[in-house]
Image (cartoon, rainbow, N blue to C red; front, side):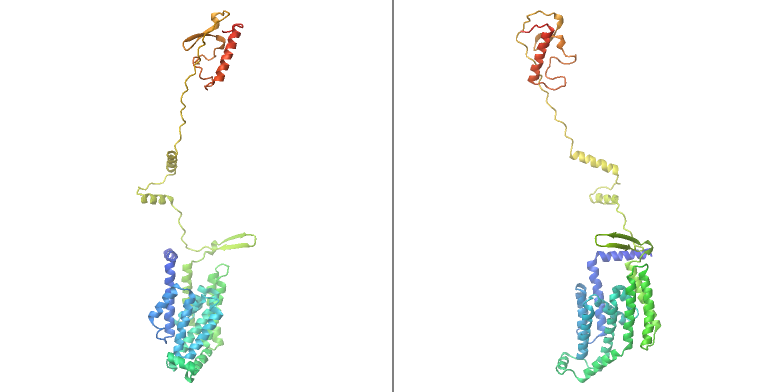
Length: 446
């Protein structure tokens, strides 16, 4: 089972990846089968029955909307019907207009359901029709399934009428319109209408299809657990019992073996379709409730079985691939080394700027006094000698700084190591003079 799921996922992923190619191809195949089915059911018009015409129309249907295929099928059947007789062609135009105005106009995709039912009836899968139509189109496929039965039996009786009447040409059709038909063609149309109205098998099959598709379509989209499987089981019982009831009502012979074979084939097709869509894992159902200003939302999420989980992203492998593309040998990724290399790159990108070195200032030297005389004699012990520019001056010892390590000869800086300006230096000289006078008992320097 795991291997089947892997193949299924590959096919599904491929179809999703190349959707622009796969979707037209699938539409082309279905359209080609539909046109060949119409040709086998209505093989009267030579041009419309040609193989190259069918292929060309299928190519056009592959790239155009669904309504174009329904329209072209109606055109082809009309050409074939007019080839049989004018009355048969006119009757099909009325039938097709009724189908279009009543149903196809409001449900455009149901034209595909009509053709699907016609194709399955031609292949002999009568009782598989309601299951396949229901799983693809839901409840809206009930009426198209019955209309497909109507077109199928219309083609059958048109074949019988064509055996009674000669083939009509374009000139015969024009003359028939001018003469308002002839007796032979009118008898053929009456034969066709009478036999279709008296065909109990056709009405019984239409009733079985409508009931079965309606039962499956209603239950299939319900919210209880295993609703899809319950719908298929209910469809089996509805198909069997409705077939028995229709046979009893219209006094027909019931062929239960063909009914069971058709049901089995229909169930197989439904399970295959469900397999590609994914089986549901109801035990792991999750429910979420949230609200906004206007509504309260109750969300029910049912996971699917055997679905492959997306692997987590391996960043080491991505790094190795990037280095391989750059031409470097791959290395194992180390977080610490990565952080260190990033820090180093930032440092090299923005280096620290060293503080600018200040040039040393030239020391300020005090000029020697021109001359000084001491009016009053002071003992030599009260003075110390200091040299300024080669001149010896005696200064009072009381004013000498406490630090013996200071360079008293260089007075370009104070105790804090900052440069002095001229005002500070003048104030320092005045203080020194005052201190000298105080120490000498009022003597002044002259």
